[in-house]
Image 1 (cartoon, one colour):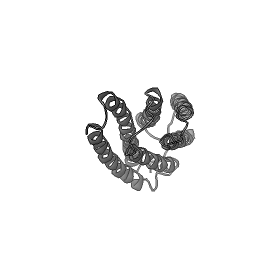
Image 2 (spheres, rainbow, N blue to C red):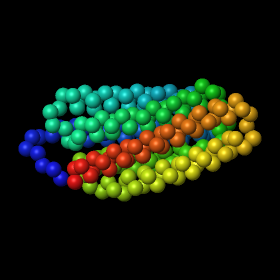
Image 3 (cartoon, rainbow, N blue to C red):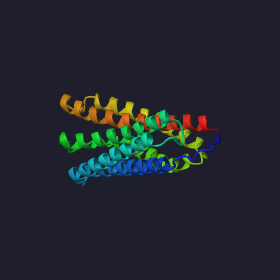
Image 4 (cartoon, rainbow, N blue to C red):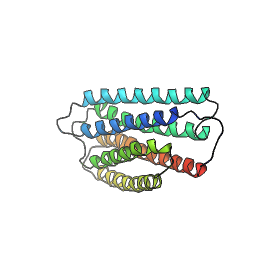
Length: 205
């Protein structure tokens, strides 16, 4: 661990933890969205609130970075990590919003596999963010996120095969594929977060 004679602002750790917990809340709302009796409009509204909370958190991170002389780790990595976490929430919120906008009463059951992978990734990310302060016990986190991303890719490919298998009309295929793509991009963003955490850990070791 590098040492500095200048005190470092540790507020960043709290803000990244807050952002990760907000993402976890969003992922759990996505799971609720797939319940048969779900009030999808109400859930989508809660997702929008989470997305706004995520934007606010990113704003505070950037504001803090601009006001801080010595940051806990590289400024570029802070910027990248905040942006990647914001992307996760944006993609998840977009998926929920599209379900409501497209008025899709029935969703392929296989899509729950995507949101379950996202929820697990969110849990791991929320657990990992507080450990940035000590930079300990993070390797298992980014390894597991990489495994989950590969699992998510397999689920995504199976869903595409199902969508284009002839069971849906062309317009429904286009609508469902857009939602599936948003969920896939959210999973990719989780991996980007994990990769950035790995980069930070290597630099600080």
